[in-house]
Image 1 (cartoon, rainbow, N blue to C red):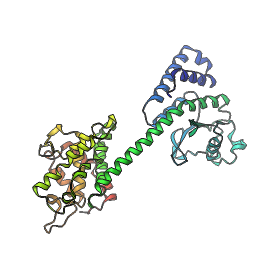
Image 2: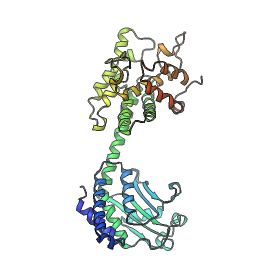
Image 3: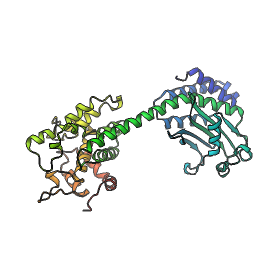
Image 4: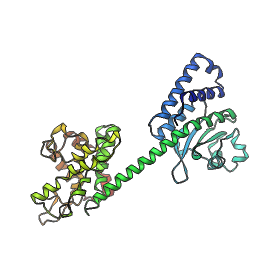
Amino acid sequence: MPVRWCELWRAVSSLMTMSGHLSWVNSSAGRGRRQVIAHELQRDLSSDMSIDALLTRILDKVSEFLVFNNGVVLLDDGNGSLVPRAVKTDRPQSRLGISSTLVDLVKKERTGLLSVDALNDERLKDADSLILEGVRSTLAVPIVSQGELLGVMILDSTSRSNAFGAKDLQLISGVAAHMAQSVRNSLLNEELRLLFDSSISALAATVDARHPLTAGHSQRVATYSVMIAQELGLEDAVIGPLLYAALLHDIGKIGIPDAVLLKDGPFTPQERETMNGHPQKTRVILEKFRFPARLRDVPRIAGCHHEKINGQGYPAGLTGMDIPLEARVIAVADVFDALTSARDYPKYDRDHDGTTRIMSTQQARTIIERDAGTHFDPAVVQAFVSCLPRIEMHARQTIQLPSV
């Protein structure tokens, strides 16, 4: 159930008041700021921002009313362990220690814990990390939704004892209660996203596995495509559909008979026509997927990866800017991986004796640069060349590239 604005307003009012800001709260400036904070919290908790971004925003809001040196939100990783998902600290995060003793106490009791003098608190006598971190005051509250412990929020002060009081614990417990359902929804969305991503990757791997020489091809093309897109300065909203289209660009090969797909050697004209039909099959198959709105262009992008700038590609013979930019990116990544892998491409990589030859990175680059303006978008080729060292590094980790 969404958090109502009036509830957030009361929570923010209480938070400011309990934190010693009563005179400020009662001023006109305080009332105005109170409304702004309530609206901001409502907006954030109702938004579709990532869980990590949401938790970071919440810590930022809390820091407007409570002074602390270290703030962290830990969430269940799905395996029963709590891991940091958001941190706000005045020291390098790599040096931030988190007390397992403190976390275990909150997990066990399912209630907030306040220590005004952490170094002399009998409950925390085994909390070595608190001593090492120099924590003098700490409070921790559980994040619980529908009876399930989702995580723990911890605030520390290394500057003084009695930095927090009972009212601070009460108000932070209220914040945790308000955010719990949003956290739960975000975690569920994250799980669905992971399931979706793993399903897409598994589907792509299944297609690649049909041919002994294409294992890992789709994943590599996706990786190279993202690198090129980043070099072009494309936004995440564009890179997302590009990534999925690259992973699934060959799914249409499911409909290609083994006699054609697995053939070792040149295709007959009829076999070439059959093979060239796979991009259209890809689009037809993907159009049956119920992609979310942000990925609605995936079928079209994936179906255009064999189009050429000069109109000599397939299946539609599109030219220039009529080809989606994402497809123009995938085209370069696809050919690069084909040339630098053990694939049957007689035009490019077959020795005179008929054996398959894997090209070096520089040989593949020469071919791709040669075909800029005819097969490939010159701007995409330029971006490819710029990030080629990173692409080559990844390629060497996944396939055996020749050194020349």
